[in-house]
Length: 147
Image (cartoon, rainbow, N blue to C red; front, top):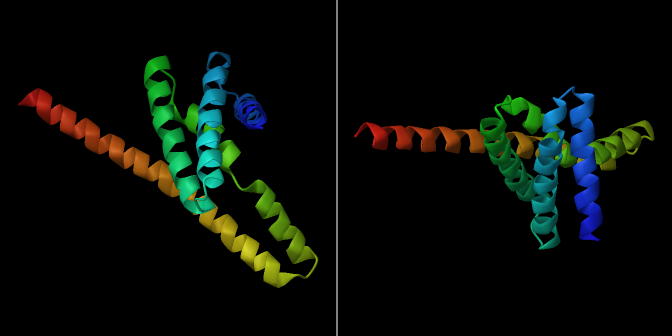
């Protein structure tokens, strides 16, 4: 079962890399970043964690891996983040929310919309936390080198 998650998340992330015109040489890395983010999300939710904190942790992992890939392969970080975050985007839940709005089931639609907003905010918070941690670590390393 987990092999199916590995393959589909890799294909989804690499496929969106193709759609977003990522350089051909970085498509494998885009797929791997998305795959590792999704597997962390899957393992955390399978272990009983709520989906919102799992999304935060998975997006933090995607951001860290994207920063590493950007430095190693000398490619802009946005190439890896955008395609790597795709498996975590709550598109199916957003679709269900819109479908329930159309079917006049507002109670369910509002619940699903709130969930979509929380997950989207979780993705943004995870990316931001990773960048802040990266800045702090780099600043500390600079201070050590200077002293």
